[in-house]
Image (cartoon, rainbow, N blue to C red; front, side, top):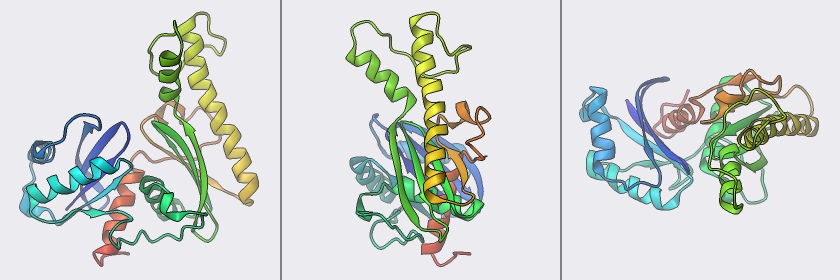
Length: 255
């Protein structure tokens, strides 16, 4: 059993995993204070014992949080936390970009998992705080991608940078042409993101060539899955499964 930790800009997801199975998971808001109770209390609710934990692995896009989580994990379990892409931890994917060191660990972890489950070539669409489109080439390498502001981030910016637009979150409106301000904002966020997905997938497929599959993941993916033919597969646990695969590779248990 391992503890996989996905530290994103909005939430930190903790998942206890036995093989591919997620046996217990919990979340913590990234901006809130961290302490040992965040891990120890969540662990207790699983019904598992710390003695059954083989190790842990972290993917993080928030450097300060990474350091805190490493210290907390060591304090709770008395062992170091493996960090994806750091300290010699091999991801098992070739990175063909101008500056490989700048690519977020979450994007690479998703690419590893998507290639494992669906096979290259493919596009991973991670729909959350940001919406990212990452390309895995025919040879299984990471070829770069596209980073866009997420739907809720766009709505937040509209509220913060204007005098009268309200603070709302994305949902699917009934009509494209909104009959009031809130519906008009929702239409922009929802249908704008949907059109963004369709347009960028079309362009990326043309650039890569051949039959390129798409896999959607992320906290907001559920809003868009089933609404467009541009999304072939939905895997809500893609990052967690990628973390598991990287852990197994680096502990000598890779398939």
